[in-house]
Length: 412
Ligand SMILES: Nc1nc2c(ncn2[C@@H]2O[C@H](COP(=O)(O)OP(=O)(O)OP(=O)(O)O)[C@@H](O)[C@H]2O)c(=O)[nH]1
Ligand SMILES: [Mg+2]
Image (cartoon, rainbow, N blue to C red; front, side, top):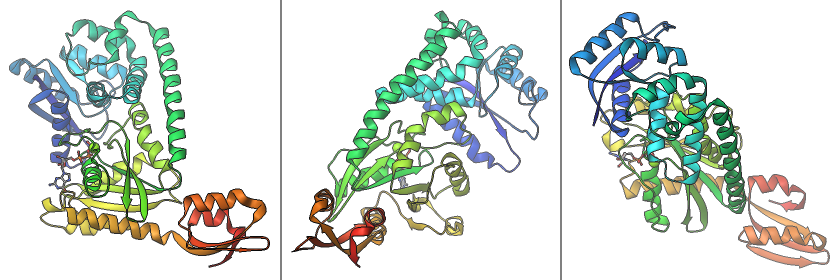
């Protein structure tokens, strides 16, 4: 285990305990162990070191006493801050973005996520290249040095730009294939699970799979960033078919480079008909909601149903904070470990979907055979009658199709 000093940079109204716990969990996930905690409330960023000069001196003393070689901060540093801190401390300094990218680089295991992380790392490193070379040549490895950056020692800035372009091209191809797969999923309700990392998204997906799908489980663990890829599973609730998509969890303070790594999650969200926003009800609800809402800002939510899922209710002693949360959308309180609660989620999903369907009678002229085909393929038709110029059908139609094919509707 690599021993590190962890430095939490706090705003005045931050929940200090939670921030310390979060950084320590990430350090553990990256393969390190915190042996000293330093924190500072920073109202005004010191352009030279980000933190105050006095704090820098304190860290230096501490590192000498404890013989620690690495310090990890929970903020993103500019190239010059990183450089100044390393020069002053004579330590390996890892910032928030590098730490998270390092975890992703270690654990990404599909082609897409590997390409995404590599791209994010290169974009982060590009403006910091000189700095990067200097510490890579001094360092033997460890947190913050893993991944494609290692090979950059032999390359130059132009090569990095070329690599970035090539990665972007490869990712575009993957995206194209995904889009085609999504087209095929078009006529069932697509539900995305999203939420802060460790909220229980994968556990919910697995629980639902166990009850309503096949046993094709996804990885879940008590780790930040257990899930690094989106995965979609089909579920069958009697007459209602849905897909459920597990996504990469969000975390605070995502820089642009990091946000790119979450684009898969954001893409899934754009495409989804329904969002299940999973919240760990056992701590810091407002904080999670803030991070989620910041991340999905800019996505058009108008046509999407939203269900807030307050998970881990078994760990909640006082539900005051949970009940305080007010939004107009649907919400449900559960523990993903209880089958009964998962059944309640299913009932809720079915009722939301049903509310989106209306019983209609349609008259489709013989000339529009393709429309009739579409309805027959995608809906359970309850009654069919023919007259001299077309076909009359009765069935429950989705809101979207109701708008689109309104001209064929004869009665409700
Ligand atoms: N006590 C309790 N623990 C839960 C519950 N749901 C999930 N967990 C635990 O919380 C941890 C995280 O669960 P995951 O399902 O991996 O969380 P996730 O949201 O997929 O997390 P990431 O993939 O890291 O974003 C695991 O150890 C789960 O066993 C719950 O209802 N109650
Ligand atoms: Mg997960």
